[in-house]
Length: 473
Ligand code: SAM
Image (tube, rainbow, N blue to C red):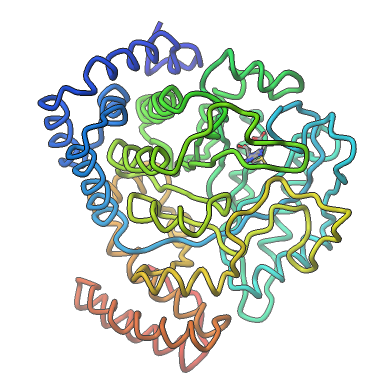
């Protein structure tokens, strides 16, 4: 039975409720009066329920869709301004005992080289990432009980936080690893992780079972209830997502929103981020053999509808998407993007030899971080390397209430400018730096509070003239 507060996967991601939601959306997809009302409700910036948002997703009326896109853009601006937070993935190990049929790390893949970074290799990779200018990482790994242990992760996090190279530092380590126990989540929290990220892949239980035939990940309930355990272990910033292309997107969309509603109802904190990965070709994976792929227009609509349904959540897009697609959806709700990414185990400090490729999926956007930063600024976005919130204790419900009230802007905008200036001083090409300095001089006038503006101006001077780093609000 559908119960948003229940801790059981079958209750909070209830199959019948999703089917009824899709039927309701079908019945009302041409009901312009209702759609108009839903758009008005969404404009209050308090979000929409999975049912309401599913009607908007199903709507095919051009005028209404135009309104939905415009509202998504406005909500994005209101909550996130023109800042885009930068990050990079770091693959620690591709050893895996699961049988995920869409992932090249599946256990039956005997020809992909298996690799696990040693602490020394991690150090080298992190220095290469710091030398690009990254401050925020997402650690990635397959699931393997003896190769990828919790001790290994904890040691790796400690290693990463301990590396100070020139002016470089990784200030926020997020982690995307298999569902685990409350005790392990507690250990990750104590190790100082930012967000715990776990994609549901698909919310459709029957499909899930077929797509995950073997290994611990085949347990749908254990996987779906992972965020509840993470919250119980004290991790209050969690990141959810589905892998679009595995099952029907409207089912996934409703499931994703129900998951967000559940976390908010049960713990008072919705997801810190929602990711929108799409299935890609990879080693022995042919994405075209999966029949639920979505086109770019549908993808853009999904991003816009998530944005207006869950206004407070950060939205992440990776280098699975091309420059063109990224450009299109940035406006509609994305707040974090990766740049200069490698999806192989190792490969940041030295490219992998052609016959030893360990990539998880083909990257669609191969530009360097400097190119991505410049491109963002050419479109008047502020690339932000800020990691202040969790370091200042602004996590979970504290972050959410600041975000919902709009007060977060008072921290984010100055922090974005100061961390961008650090990047420009330490890592940018002359062309990027010239563009960035102009942008910062212009954007500083948008710090609303005059006292804060004076502090930021002084801090920017200290960064530029005295090589001082790590100012934050
Ligand atoms: N082992 C962890 C787990 O089971 O969740 C971490 C997952 S993996 C390193 C990160 C994500 O990559 C997966 O959750 C999946 O959504 C995505 N992924 C796997 N194969 C993919 C493919 N062929 N194309 C795009 N994304 C893929």
